[in-house]
View (cartoon, rainbow, N blue to C red):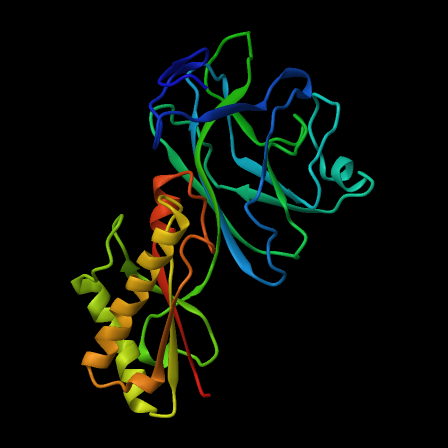
Length: 293
């Protein structure tokens, strides 16, 4: 969509310079959808969070409550302008689907602000593509009219900052750190091109330190990551420096060298899309796992 002005009104992007838009409700069950290929196939049994921001276009006559999500094994190509119902999707030969719906108690009818929409789900292990849109017919769509006029153009929403990320366990306290489990540090996120830790990160590292000192049989692996800005070789070196920063902190506070190993993966293992500022910040991270060798 043109931003900030377009055929349905005016809205500044939530981030970046552009956004997309589509009809979630329109006369005659007319529908539009967005489809995208995921950066990698989802892992079976892994919990993921999908989130994006929506804003109702000024030209809309209606607002809705429900946003549909379809995750598929193959790219969907159906010659229709009607709704993609669950029945229609599951009758598609040679494909597999997981269908979700994000339901809200209130209608998304504010035309001036961006609203975050989010859902958590467990992957079945075949999901390679994602489709966003309204999977209900007009009759089944929960809607409210926002303008009293006869044109009834429908409900058109702008969408920005779509991200689909794995939900890794976060380290919250000494008692919750389990062995053989990969955790992402909650507060250890790095600014662009940096590998220094801040005060909030040091507080979180204290609980890991206590766990290692409480049980001297435990060892720790530390994994550093970057976003995809920069050359692969440089990103790998930067990710190693990030992991080493954590390793040095543990050594300086009494953990033996032999109990610590650290690795840098560069940008090879993203947990979010690198196409947004939010996604890149999530990818600049450090994870760890404690174990008994």
